[in-house]
Amino acid sequence: MVNGTRLLIDWHNYGYSILRVNRVNKIIVLVAKLYERFFGRFGDDNFCVSQAMRTDLFNQFNIRAEVLYDTATPKFALNLSQEDKNQLFVRNELWDCVLGKDRPFLILSSTSYTADENFMLLVEAL
Image (cartoon, helix red, strand yellow):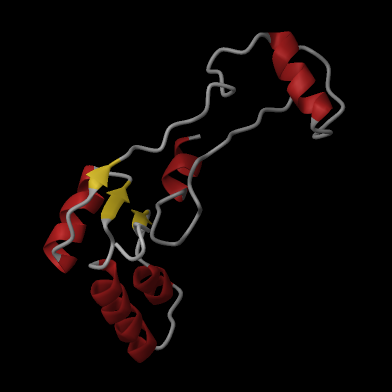
């Protein structure tokens, strides 16, 4: 803590792993990993999005983190009426559509679609 200010780090993924997936030069990836390992320890509190990330943070960097799961806000509803669905499409100008079984459908995903996330698993399941 400096001057009463606390450093909170919210770990969703590692910058170095995204660089590696994008085939950035191995030396730059190594420097990024060392950077995260060194400066990550200066956080007064650390948060992450899963138990797996928590375990990995500890095993790789000796950083203890609390898990705060990502959740949708209350405006996201699982069971919209047909009329609500139609209004969603019309309001967002996605399509001119009518109520019925032949209307288009929309799938929303919380993934950031980086190569290390198997988004194709969802596509193939459809």
